[in-house]
Amino acid sequence: MTKGRDEAAAPACVAHTADERIVLLTLVAGTFLAPLDSSIVNIALPAIAADFGARIAAAGWVATAYVLTTASLVLTMGRLSDILGLRRIYVTGFLVFGTGSAACALAPALGWLIAARVLQAIGAAAMFAAGPALVTRTFAPRRRGWALGWISLSVSAGLTLGPATGGLLVGAFGWQAVFLINIPLALIMAVLARRLLPEDCTQSEPFDLTGAVLAAVTLTSLLLSLSEIDRSGITSPNVPGALVVSIAAAIAFVYVEQSKAHPMLDLSLFSKRGLSAGVIAAACSYASLFAVTFTMPFYLLRVRGIDAQFAGLILTATPISMAIFSPLAGRLSDRWGSRGLSTFGLGWLAMSLVAATRLGVDTPPVYVALTLFSVGSGLSVFQAPNTAAILRAVPPGRAGVGSALVGQARNLGMALGIGTTAAIVSVNLRGEDIMAIAGALTREQAEFFVAAMRPALLTASAVALAGAASSWARGRDELEDQAVDARTRPRVDSPGE
Image 1 (spheres, helix red, strand yellow):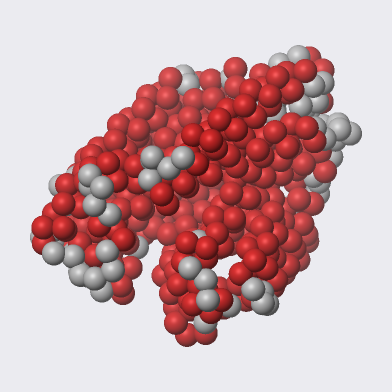
Image 2: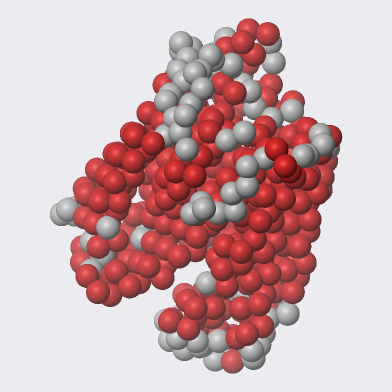
């Protein structure tokens, strides 16, 4: 990084006086809302398709448009946060998200609903990008891991609890309810964030519009190719076309960013091992997790024939484990540093995925729940320490970009996990689309799917091990080389204390 960029990346800011616990509660509530909405809508798609008289494939764009828009704009919102201020972008995100939610609920046609979901996703991208960076702005280095543990818990809980919450709302009030519930929540959070979060630090640097457009094209095309694998299989002709566009845009993006005095993404940041290794490890962790997320609902509902309510109860094993271990892992990373914890977490996740390959058509439900609990435990031990290491590696004036890279790694990991898992399962099913069968599965079909699922889970385990290697390769971080005097640090065990 050049000297000029270092100076530009360190704006002068007045010390804030916001109470850490109040800030944390505000951020936890805010970072729960956006991922909840990304998963809550899936359960409503059949009702949406029926209401508008559309095919389920067309209704699927209600979910796809949200994911693509969020993923393509997180990096842009991170850079805007650094220039215009973290609080301003965060509050604006809630307002746009709430407006988009209202437009979704009032949509008179499917096209209107998809467009409204794009607006909603713009707000979600702003919330994703600014949230973790506000932790860096508010908390001292020795307390960021603890705070990020709660942030990691809220994101994972939102992703996991969405389907169950959506099912209850759709069943009781109709599909519009999954959007209407966001409106008061978004307005309340916007007011609280505006009043309680630290004042903004701004910069006079120009915004790199060309870089933002190229980044959006790169990421959108890549995610489209992966989602096409999920929908139509790896042999779909749309897959190579989207990949070619993504690669071409990525090459142009690198060329443009290297020539800019104030790029949207300063590529020299990736020379820092703490950042580059952490981003790779984060993408690997979510790719591994979503191999389970993709296969387990079908396994429980169709292969095992478990009713939806009991299946939902089993799936809560993952967020329960994260509720237990995420804050604890964050506190430990403040004491011991990130390298050992994040590496151990991904190693544990890899072993849990190997254990998941032992699931069969007659496996007791309690063993399934324990396996999912173990998966969530490994992920929770990894997340907060890894995020803290990434944010420590970026200069203060690039906190928004650093936070956006964490969100981008999550989005890419999710897409890669689903796309790769779908491709592996499809190949091992040898052309028999068991997941599209509407009626009950025969035992032979159930065993066939389980056999096809196992290579996907083993691949996910290998990806988790690759992430563990990347996490270890980042080296020792600063906290590991500093003595800790626990008597000089205030003790706060939970946001409520």
